[in-house]
Image (cartoon, rainbow, N blue to C red; front, side, top):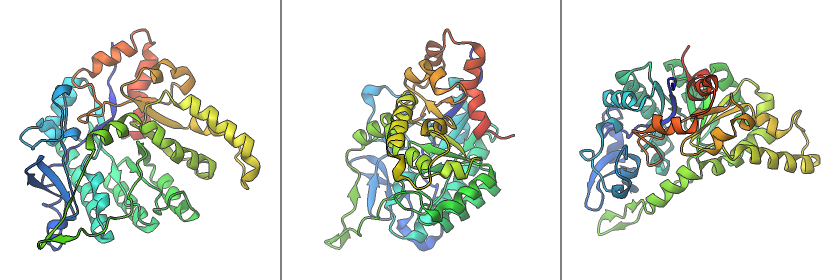
Length: 378
């Protein structure tokens, strides 16, 4: 018999009024909002510079042969954006609790104005918190976002999220906004330890890239950019997420962040897991060969620090198969609902295939205990 499942990877398709109902009118049409679109039915627009569809992030149980970006909110399962309907989905799929990550928020990275960008992130956190409370706060666990444009901004929002009751935040870039961790980031890691919140690497995204220039006006209208290649982007991001996280993980270890901040709790989400042993072996080899170039040498091998991370798997058998090598205390499970990577509504059937001959205590750790230990509420 399968135990309760703690789903470490679910997403909200943000409701159409997520930002417009909460943000200051001074921002006008620059606030993220939904528009009717001749090509995509409905789509999200951000800061008057980007239009992006949401169909591939709102799939649910849709037939894979019919999946596409062209959608409207009338076309998608209400559980994508309605909290009470999401609870019904959890029941149907055998999920006891779920972490909730964003879908639409990521495109806010195109916003040029730092003040507007920070306001959008704060508004998202407030709206997501209320959404989970309305659904069931004992089963929906919102994951906070922090702006990565400076340590002060990041620390301010982390404090606010911790005070509100968030148990985790999503890493998307180094807190100071740099390409690598810096000494300026150190107070943020100390604060993260102090709050007890878990850092969730959700595919270890690239964070907020350099904002694009204002589109040129043509015939008195701005040439708003459209999001192209979204299908390829979603497939690549979803299935290769583990590979994109490796550089961030290596920098966390090799720069000594984990050594200086031993109380940090870190979970890798939507990264898969089967690649971890080989990555640890390769990282050890590289470090041992080149350690003389490093002024502050590590007290342990890089692969030993990797054992301090928990990571989830979804559509793979390598992680569960090599659970003894990866570590029974390190594995978790995620569905990716309602994105294109999930098995909904057949998650429990899939899990039974993976664990048909596994000891019950191991299954309970992987499906519930490991995740609850770092993401749950005491």
